View (cartoon, rainbow, N blue to C red):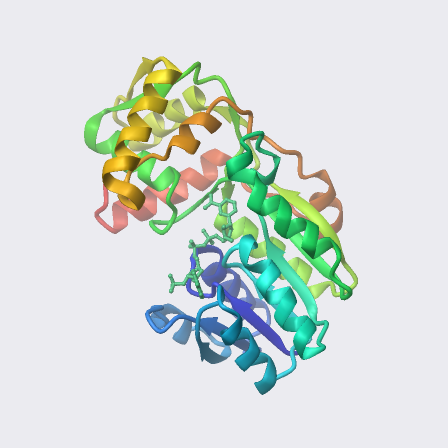
Length: 296
Ligand SMILES: NC(=O)c1ccc[n+]([C@@H]2O[C@H](COP(=O)([O-])OP(=O)(O)OC[C@H]3O[C@@H](n4cnc5c(N)ncnc54)[C@H](OP(=O)(O)O)[C@@H]3O)[C@@H](O)[C@H]2O)c1
């Protein structure tokens, strides 16, 4: 089975390849990476990796790869919004490999600006003539590469407080990247599977409960300082205006604090043997990793 993987050097991609190396050592996998991607960790794995250097967001990269080799499976982890580009290139090349795509439960957001691009991509994917599996994870955590809980833990550890905009009672169900890696491996190993799966973590918490858990794990008090939601929106808008991409918080993130982000994963449990770790176990691992690396 020939497989092309995008996003191999990312959080979920690296863990997927680690799991693959443990379960099927010596497997051949082709990876589309950027010229700037750091492949050091991947090169140490017991896998036969072949690299294509390019940019998964542009058609020229796909045209070039698809003329060089025909794949049975393409696993695309980089970004759901790039799917329409991939589909166009596959159509042009007259190829219909099995597609395994990572989307996001962000598609369910009522904030149109946030979800519209995802909805458009999913709509196009649904028309794909070949078979496909779509995994929709919730917020991902699990290593210094994660942009979510890693930042939150670091902030709490350094400053001993965390701002809570709005009620702080909305629900979260973060998923550990290694649980995504296991779900990817299950799908890759089960070629008959098709369709979409929401995948979420083993625990549902409010932001307040999450901060209490972080407090317990870092063993330091974390004051929860409440602000009205409008102040958060105002601050994030200003920060984004000044710092752009470098801003610690985006306006949309604050707006989305009002939404519950817990999604059941019963279908994935049934079809993929998906039993994600609890948040306490996952965060214990993340905090231990941060300590080992001297981050906290
Ligand atoms: N973060 C979340 O909370 C969250 C929630 C739901 C869904 N998702 C989705 O889940 C997927 C996996 O997320 P992740 O956190 O595991 O990924 P990640 O750590 O952010 O890694 C992204 C990967 O994509 C590669 N990449 C980015 N742009 C590229 C391009 N133009 N061409 C080729 N490669 C490119 C990166 O390569 P380099 O090494 O060169 O940077 C890296 O390997 C993503 O599709 C993300 O949108 C994320």
